[in-house]
Amino acid sequence: MKLSRTWVFDLDNTLHDADAHVFPHMHQAMTDYLMTHLDLDEAGASNLRERYWRRYGATLQGLMRHHGTDPEHFLRYTHQFPALHRMVLRWRGLRVALQKLPGRKIVYSNAPAHYTRRVLDLLGIADLFEQVFTIEHAGYRPKPDPHGYRRLFRRMGLKPWNCVMVEDTRANLETAKKLGMKTVLVGALPKRPGYVDLSVKSVLQLPRAQCRIR
Image (cartoon, rainbow, N blue to C red; front, side, top):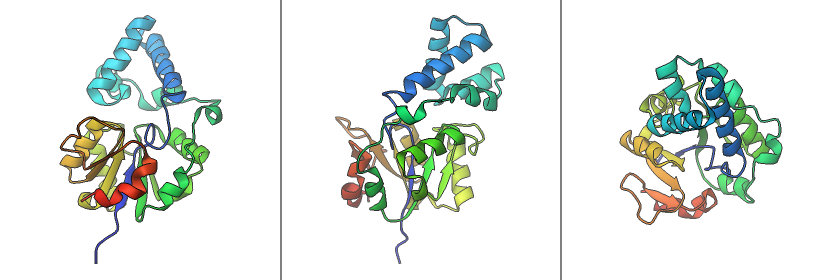
């Protein structure tokens, strides 16, 4: 008997649009943190934030490696969203689309747990996910580091070849593919990379397109 798939979803820009309001707020908070704690001007802090994000997959990883930053302190400071209920943009039909996907569903985010759970609540889909796996559970080693993926497999008793990683970030999908997962890129590309099994413009298209994942 064929086992049902386990769907592993990224959060930001996969299950909701973070570019419009959330990411600009978060990026400014991180820049402010670097200015305060590393004694940088705004331009220097912004450049360092982006450089660490591009190199390590998350600004936090660079700060921990090179500056001994306390990850809990950083995440508390940079993920305060008093008006998050007005910032999260819900896509109509998201809940129905997720319900049409047979199998277990998990969220795996580089964001902290308190933020991830709050966004899922605001989207009205928190109850659809069996587990929320975040940067804390990954030992503060963000995607695309394979360490977090392996922790997820152990924690949930997952076989990589029976999992589908649904992501908007190509580097994270490349790691997932190397570990044996199927991969879905959210966001159209002119040419699909070899490590992407399926690409969709929106996660809303996934129920119809899932049959193309081999």
